[in-house]
Image (tube, rainbow, N blue to C red; front, top):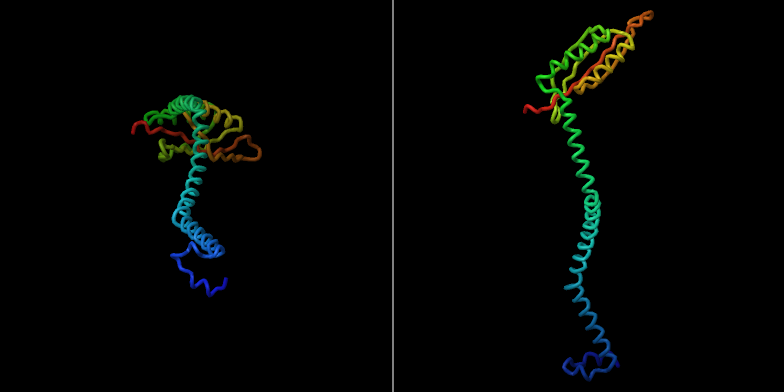
Amino acid sequence: MELSSLSELDFNESGEWPAAVKAIAIILLCVLVWAGGYYYIIKDKEIALATAEKKELSLKKTLEVKSAKAVNLEAYKKQMKEMNVVFSSMLQQLPRKNEVADLLIDISRSGLVNGLEFQLFKPGSERPVDFYAELPIQMKVVGDFHQFGEFVSAVASLPRIVTMHNLTLTPLGKDSNQMSMDITAKTYRYFDEQ
């Protein structure tokens, strides 16, 4: 079969084409149908499938996290109740506004009982932090090392929360047991009145 005879082929008489031409025409038609089907039908479905697979992985991870939480739900509830009890007891250790003056007296009394001499006792202004206010108290006291330890221990045993910050010890002389301690005590007040 020659190429010149291909131009003489009539589409209406395709049943009488030579077998090789029929085979090529069928293969070409199949390729066109497959390419058209892929482009118009399958291509969009593949993109949707890839998106769905990514979403499936994300959902599986979320399921694993949530199922791990669900397994421990009772333990979490019990722990939450315990934390609420501890938080409530800690809130009770924070002085209310009308108790701050008594706390300042207790701190100074603890120093005097332990033999310390106050050179400075200066409460600062309250600074709000989240749900509580912080009240710094600058102190400079003179005494020996053991008196300082007893003072800090006495302040730590007060019924209200007081923390010590920026401790500096300075000896008063070479032959003296006495030292000067600069320290900032901080107490905290819960905003329950507001």
